[in-house]
Image 1 (cartoon, rainbow, N blue to C red):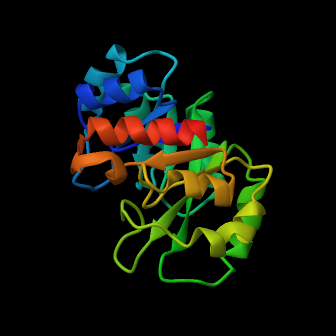
Image 2: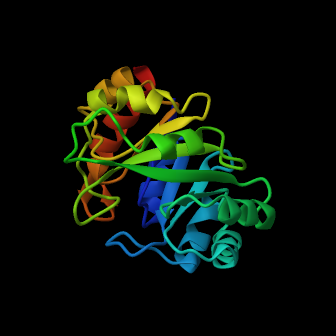
Image 3: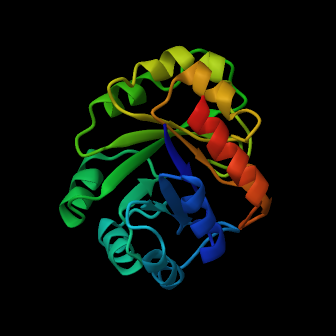
Length: 218
């Protein structure tokens, strides 16, 4: 199970997550209470284990700008929260060869329909240059960082159609519910931010440890 701890804002939290066994650490460059700058991340990354992935989260639509930030911050991967574009991804892959590229798609938390953007799933299943698809919760006012889980049972069949594309589940995960999310959706990886926080941008060490332990042992 690939485990990403997202929305890191300081070295203490990022180093603890790595020490506890996280596979990847996320840094948000989009507008958010947890937003960081390339300079902040560049100061953190060299002090983290080389084996731990450093993933930047972006909503901007300029591949050259994303590439510049990725290089300046020392990232090993990019997570896109914009709509999928094959041309955009291809350009980014050319600018950042060897970096993990994660495309986000969304599940509306208010929907209990078993159908979830079937055409989008079909497109992403074999999308060139995309290394994994992250499914996050969407509300009427936010398309990420909601802290609310979508209906895993309702989404199960639709998301299973992503195979063989690796699936990462996000949105409302906590130490208490991550086991259930994994058992229902059988993802390749999980991603958490607010579910392991003491306050926005600050991790709770006990929650962090429990989340990683529960995800790893499921």
